Amino acid sequence: MRRPQEFSIDASSARTLRGWLRSTTLPQGQITRAKIVLALHAGKTPSEVADEQFVSCKTVHKWRNRFVESGVDGLLDEQRPGRPPTLDRKTIDR
Image (cartoon, rainbow, N blue to C red; front, side, top):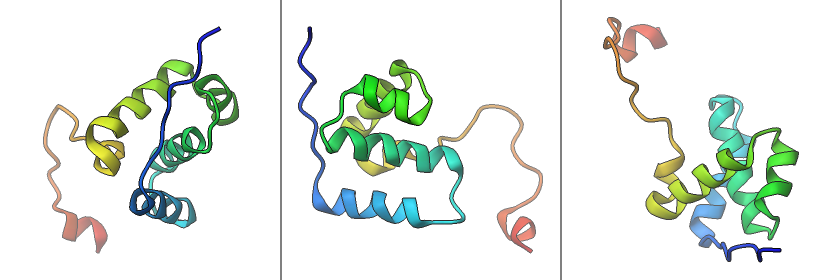
């Protein structure tokens, strides 16, 4: 049996991710990513986290690796390919 990989995050990142959990306006996917990283930080194995969050182990590893590479910014949605939006953010918010 493989030992779980050591995983820890700094206090600032943990505070940011806990703030995401309290948000009512963030996308659900972003909140799930925060839950994944915080659960790994709490010492859970990737398979335990996957079962709790109803995602695959591959997904847990993907977000853990992105967090290790880019920190909290790695958990944000990236720009998707395709046609750019025709409405600007100000119009959408209005």
